[in-house]
Image 1 (cartoon, one colour):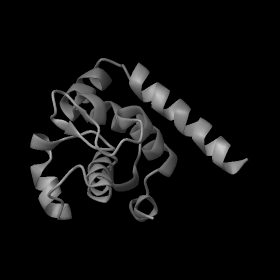
Image 2 (tube, rainbow, N blue to C red; image 1 turned 45 degrees about the vertical axis):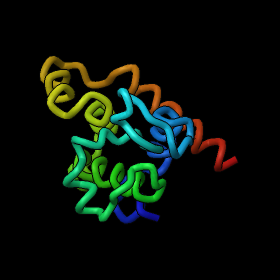
Image 3 (spheres, rainbow, N blue to C red; image 1 turned 60 degrees about the horizontal axis):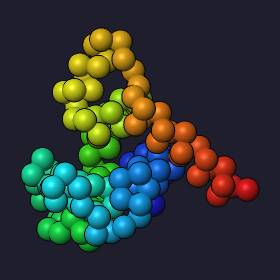
Image 4 (tube, helix red, strand yellow; image 1 turned 90 degrees about the horizontal axis):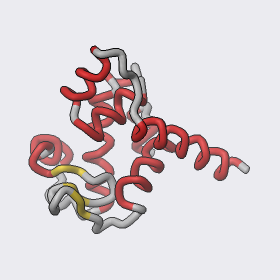
Length: 126
């Protein structure tokens, strides 16, 4: 899978999609700016879309490719602190860095997604 290739935790991605879009490929948020499964905020990711050859963020496969590209970049190609990754994904990397500088290493958002990722993993493995 694309997750394995990039060393990204599959269950974290599933939990993020569930939280972001409830698995609705055509979901939109932020006044229509955040699109699709992984709620990609289009104007911040135009270069990434081009890099992945994605023109339509409502295409599920393209949406996930762009989202994984972003997570991979945030995770320093494998050195992954998922709280940092998820905080950056949710609020932007500069704000996440500000939180970390103040000694705040998780948010309700990052904690809930990581908790849900564990639940999904347990459900699948039962």
